[in-house]
Length: 338
Ligand SMILES: O=C(O)CCC(=O)C(=O)O
Ligand SMILES: [Fe+2]
Picture 1 (cartoon, rainbow, N blue to C red):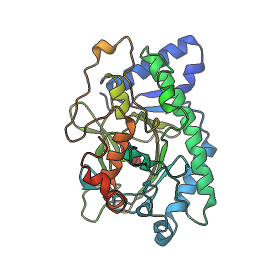
Picture 2: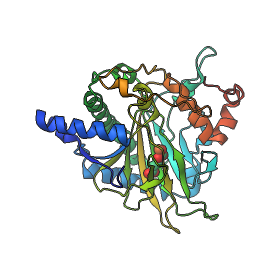
Picture 3: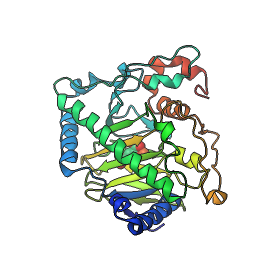
């Protein structure tokens, strides 16, 4: 792949059949060959973005005690604040702090015969004295779900699949997830791991990044390539479920963030567009399916058709403190979630 990620304009989907066909061709190629692209024409206004960004900055500017008051260690649902150094990716410490937010729902404590992944449904934790954060973050989730839903339809149409094929998997209670993230410069040990290399678990990720940079995508030869910020655009990447859904035809690509230099801060906001936890992701049929290479199963990271099993496995790994405090039983089961 070249060093430049493709830039796709979602508004072309509604600009007549010719523009839509060209858009589909570019989307198809980007999703198949790269798994990452910039998206413009999404309809999210600069005012909405500014509102979210300023609420996020206000949150990270709170005294640490106020942030820790909503620590995710309090939440069996993995919601809330993770301080710097408490998250792990690929077995190593990430150097970022973050607030995890999801669809606002009552706790779903799994009954003995229910899968453990239902723990992931539950209420958020919000900082006292910053009511605008709740309003803005939940608004952002609504707005980005709508954009992601449209984009998923266009992507399925682009590969010749029925565009509503996964509507049922998202119906009623999709597992929407928003992260507000700060990378506070480089770790004292100089490791440089803002967040370690990983693939996202779900269908689509819509990322807002500031002007600092540091996001990198793995190219087919194994080198990591910078994704420089493009103002006004979202960085889109495909998650593992889309790879599973298309038997490897579409790509979930490894990516990571390198810590900003010195004490420079970087802010980013990934939004993960995920189906219902209990959705079973059936393979979609499409005219290029015979060219799909298949999904390579990694024994250390098996992929399950039932989405929730992938998701809880990831959370238990990334947040060992929450896992030990609230989910000893799931950890003991070994492959709890299988
Ligand atoms: O902060 C970023 O730019 C990317 C973060 C990311 O990949 C993630 O949280 O899954
Ligand atoms: Fe990611």
